[in-house]
Amino acid sequence: MSDWRDPWQWQAYRRMRRATIMGTVLLTFALASFLPAGWILMMPSDPTLRPELHQLAAWIILGLCGLAALLGLSWSSRARDAFEVEVNGRLNALREQAMIHSLDLDIEIADTYPPMLLSRRFRKIGFAGPDCLILPMDPVEVSAAPAGTAGDGPPFPHVVLRFPGAEPDRVRVAPGEISTSWLQAEVLAEKLHDYLDPRITWDRDDGPGIDMAAFIDSMRPK
Image (cartoon, rainbow, N blue to C red; front, side, top):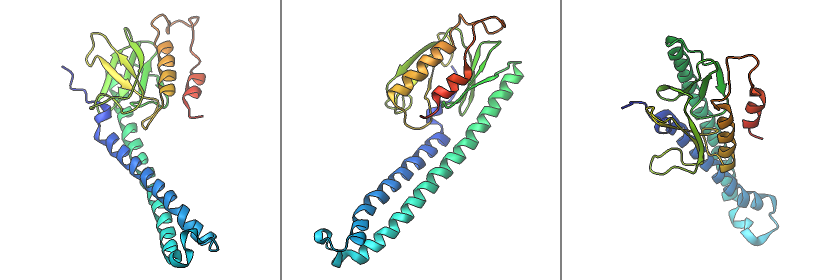
């Protein structure tokens, strides 16, 4: 039985996700509070919100809106930066583990969580989560999946890679560490399905190739 830890339950990931959600809540509160306060201050002749009674409160709320917006942006930014440092550390650890086994994980699939590295020559696939994981590409089954429940994968659409006979036998990957759409998951599944096709010969110069630049570009937010 593998002791590989689920990257979706990784404390660093969950901490980043909580901070990002709280930052979004603060920004939403700032926007919702700004609208009535701003109307009172910008339209004092409109009696709808009784500006003669609420002008002082409007100034206070306006100040709180600015503070909440700055706090939300700072909170989210610091959480993402800290998480990126953690992920980069795991990527380095994955590369070191591959080197120990004389594997060259020379391709990084951009903008996925957990980060993925591939080996052209050895047809291996590595995942950089709380623990490093290297599995054979062949065989592998790729499919899009809906949001997971009760700890079963991420709480939004993602891609499931199944490795029959391996341990663990499946890994869940998403095109980004925060919320993603079903369309994004389908695009990632289609690209990975083509990219991991066992009929592709990587060790021949005249073999079929993959336009890696186009693949990476297709996964960037539009």
